[in-house]
Structures are given as structure tokens and as C-alpha cells.
Image (cartoon, rainbow, N blue to C red):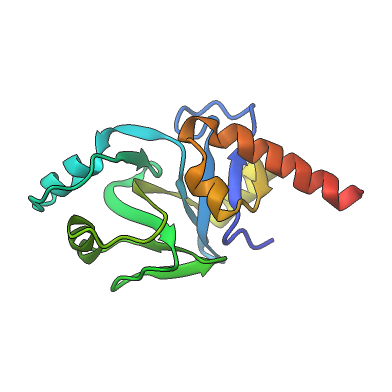
Length: 175
């Protein structure tokens, strides 16, 4: 099953603090592995901190910064709607994209943003055999979450909403 554009929702049995109660948007699924970003784990940092640390000294809003995963935690990814593009934007699926270049930060400091977006640091990456093993251990639910759910739901409630959506999708297959 191709996971691109879907969300992996951690089941309650997942104990790893990084992934417990996490919602991971998968932006790439190839024969070499799976890559995504956790959407509901807020960090202590803000977008203003991020811009200042990257040398952009401009008055930007103080918005939350999220921990996208344990791989390359210094990398910054903007998860966003497809109404905005930058030099290396990957158009994933269902009008959702990921971007990770310095131009996105510059444009952000200028007030040029997509309608919906979230900045994350790091990514979540699995080797093909690793994701298969985790799926066989029932670590993950899978669901397609719509744009309003992904961006308008408070990060603290996103896991609960995602679990409900996955349960409903499962029930819909059998009814």
C-alpha cells in the first residue's frame, strides 16, 4: 500500500516518546523507504526563533514550531497547501506540499505564505523493512485527513481526531 499523502497515527501501544500519540503526514513512499513529518509535537521554539537563528532579522509572527521527527533535526520543512510554491517544493497529494529551502524562510519573513502551513524541524524516516515491521506489529493506524483537520485542529487534539477518522474510515469499508 502506498502511504504517500496519508497519515500514520500512532496506536496507544507505541511507547517511544517521539512517536507516542503522534500523527505523521507521509510525503514520500518509495521502494527505498518512507518519509514524513510529525504534525502534533510542538517544540519550545517558535518561527521567530527559527528565522533569527537562520539570519533573517525581520518582524515575523510568533508561531509554534513542531518536531517533525528524529532525523536531521536541524532541517526545517514547511508543510503547506499547494497554493504556494518555492524552489524545491514537493507537491505530494491532495493539494498538500512540503518545502525545505531558504527561499521559503525569506518569503515567510516578507509575509508571503500559503493559506495553511506549519513549520517542522526534522523528519520521520523508515527503511522499507522497518515500516513493514511496525505495520505488522500494529503500531500505526492509517487515515487520510483533510486540510481543515490537518491545519485547523489544535495540535493537542489532532491525535484524537485522527484516531476517530481512522476508525470511521475502517467502519465505512465494512458497512
